[in-house]
Image (tube, rainbow, N blue to C red):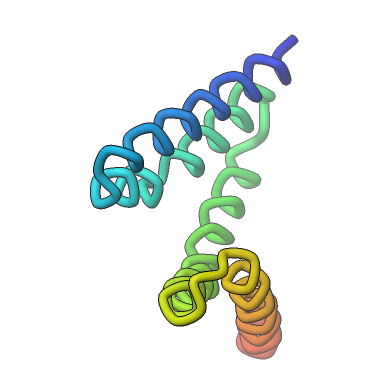
Length: 112
């Protein structure tokens, strides 16, 4: 039952963002980039009795994921703006995200 509630609340958030984005892309984009997904994930983990160590590691990983995500968004923006094809943009963005995430992982593995 709890998994259905999680899916319902998460889905409602996506519906809200896309509905707002249709009216004003600026506000829709700002809401989409708010840490609502992270907050929801933290709440779900907390309600599932995750320990504090797991929550801290989750937050650290989310922070580390922001740089590859930024490269993904910039790539999708540039490619979509140039070619007007969402599927190309998302595919290229996913490749760039993967490359930068892998690169970041290897760098962090050496440092830590």
